[in-house]
Each structure stands twice: as structure tokens, then as C-alpha cells.
Length: 234
View (tube, rainbow, N blue to C red):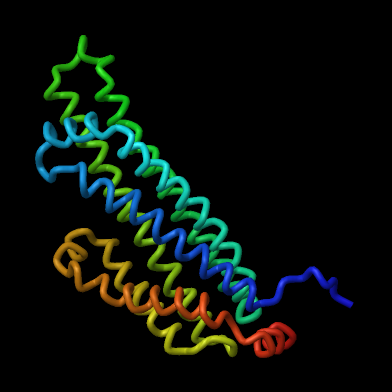
């Protein structure tokens, strides 16, 4: 007999939904909301002044990104356990792809520390203020490029998760199809010029796909009986 402490598939699904929401919130705060308030596009001096004036807010953005990485790792493990009855190899491949993307995200979050170091005032004896401001702005731009690379990996992950949902017997196929389209939209970030041309329309599928998946996981979870039947067949 299986131990009574074993968690049900529905519980795993709802926990995945919780971590999905937490990941989305922390990543948006760390990569979009806080930088959007401090970074002035094309103006290194104004950006540097904003960072120095709101240092704690900028540090909060860095911390939010690191927390998002931790939440995403937990989500990856939960999704692997949830979808391995559908196809263990594809589920494992999706997990490895997402973890590779998360390593890039962790690196990009570290790039947010560089402007704080550059603008600390320790290097004024070597560089001019304008040079330090330009260098800090450059690190912020590198952070954006690293984020775009992560999004491309995440697009592959969404496509594979969407396929697993579509082939599953315990979740609606429409959500799987929406996640596949969401992943295709994210994959446009492989070509920055293409993603810029299609923006923001290339993110519309993600809004439908990811939101529908989050809501379904939190509200419904999965069908326990069908999950166990598919797991037994596998």
C-alpha cells in the first residue's frame, strides 16, 4: 500500500498554480515594474540619478528576480511530477530547458548589481562621472538582452508544457493549445528585431495561455482519477 502522506495530483497541481502566480509576480516586479520606474530610455545620466536616489527600490528589484528564480525552480519540479505520466522524456526535457533558461535569468539578475557597484563613487579617480553613468546604463541593457534570451528558453518550455497538457487526459486540451501559442509568441524573442516589430501583439497569446493555466490549476487542479489512470498506463 502507498503511504497516506502521498500528495494527490490535484494538490500538486494547485501548488504549481500557487508557485506559477508567485513566479509571475516577482519576475514582473523585478524585471518590468521597478526598472520601468527608474530607467529612462536613452538617458544614462537620468537613469543613474534615479538609481542612486532610490537605491533600496533598485535592490528590491534585484531581490525579486532572485526570488523569482527560486519559485521557478519549484514550479519546474512540480510540473515535471505532474506531467511525467503523459510522457516522461518530454516532461524531463522541458524541465532541463527551463532550468537552462533559469540559469540565464539568475545571471541577468546579477547584472543588476553592477550599476550599484559602478555608481558607488569608488571609481571616480579613474573614470569621469559621465563614463560611469554610461557603463551603468550598459549593464542595464545587458540585463535586458539576457532577459530576452531567458524568454526564448521559456517559450520552448511553454510549447512543451502545452503539448503535454494537450496530450493529457486530466486537463482541458484548449489550455494546452493556448500554451503552445504562448510559447510561439515568446520564441519571437530569438530575433530581437522580429519581437520588437511584433510587440506587443506577440505577447497576447501568453496573456491568454498563462492566465488560463494559472486559473485552472488554482481553481480545478487536475482530475485525480484520470491522472492515476494515465500514470498507470504509462
